[in-house]
Image 1 (cartoon, rainbow, N blue to C red):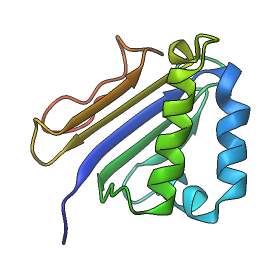
Image 2 (image 1 turned 90 degrees about the vertical axis):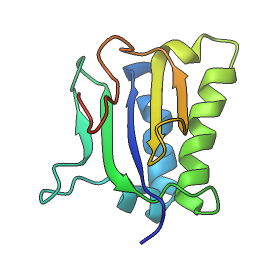
Image 3 (image 1 turned 45 degrees about the vertical axis):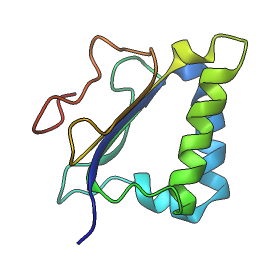
Length: 122
């Protein structure tokens, strides 16, 4: 079955086009973030503010050797590390099965976007 994580991320309008370009360039990224009706997960548009996107991925295998994980992680790392304030336009949170296994990047809607234990609240 493998190790699973809860992942949620949000992207403000100034960086949405860049993320959509990442999706357009990779079928695996598109397949990962598309909306799944059965699990109420995937991409949502205009969730917090007009033009933003929020993605919720429940119980996912988030392994760095997966292409889609590397591409999404790189997008967020690039945004956070850019000198134009990109960290204010993104928020990424991942919590593994071990609650001490966490990644958090960016500040977009940080008061609203979080993962409580045991499930996601958004």
